[in-house]
Image (cartoon, rainbow, N blue to C red; front, top):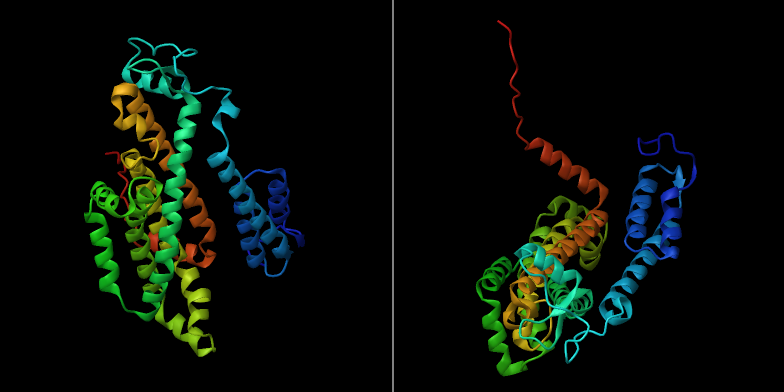
Amino acid sequence: MTAVAAGERSGTDRYAIASVVIAVIGIPVVPIWLGFRARRRIEQSGGLLSGTNIALAGIVLGFVQLAIWIAALLFVDPNTIFNSAGASADGVGCGPGPRDAGTFRDAVEFIVKERESISGGVCIGGPAELWELGQSHMKVSLVAIAAATLITVPTGLWLGHRGQGEFVAVSVSNVGRAVPSLALLAFFVAFLGLGFTNVAAVLTLLAIPPILTNTYVGVRQVDRETVDAARGIGLTEGQIIRKVELPLAMSTIFGGLRLSAVAVVATATIAPLGNVRSLGNPIIEPQIYGLPGQIGAAIVVALLTLAVDAGLGAVQRAATPAGLKVSQREKSKRFSLSIPWRTETSS
């Protein structure tokens, strides 16, 4: 009996049951964590615990709930939530911003309450408008991240498995970091025109380098003896990629995905230059939103970026095999520096 199962009665793991119950209630994310935790506990229990299929059901339901929540956040009309008419033509229903409140406090006030624009005549700010801008912001960001992932992960797995294309992966990464996003936006105007497709294409190119590089590096870091052993027991090349290299490289791949997601969500503020509304509108339109609007929108973008990174980090930890986590912890302990503590001696 392992240490994980010590003191645990035999039967269905309670984490597996909890994952399904919480998923049925409608709470997102938590069932996914509980499901992966249950599967790990079951594997380490030495047959004492059961409920692998229940845990898998909790994980699936958790991802379904997460997809529903994301769709609701992206497509629900914010006016139905905040009971706001939005920006009106005559500015009726919203007063001017606070006077002499301080820049940061005024920016926070811009986030939580509507006000009349600097030029007058329209209502700006408040949860309803920022939610609407955030929806458009995240739509173009998610499309870019999804497109980059579909392109680069299979390519990186194939190149890494073959042991070829290191020059291509490194070159694409360096070029992607060197080319300014604004230059790409202007370049694609000639081919794609202004609009959602142009901005999504630019952000996709921005997201490709970290995912491609990390996928390639993650596969190449897999122990070659492990790959040879898998080949020796009769696994095909495709099975080796799916069952050996991909799981072991998952942590590194998610590291690249997190880098890309942070870069894309932060850079999507340029979308208004391509005629796509986003949280960049208050930042690049100071004649309407003023300095408080710029700072307020920047705060929202920063919080959104941190939330995306934290969410992907949680998924990364859940998807990383338990044995790999133990190996990483041992390496971190091995390379950590001991700090000598000063001791007081009495004469």
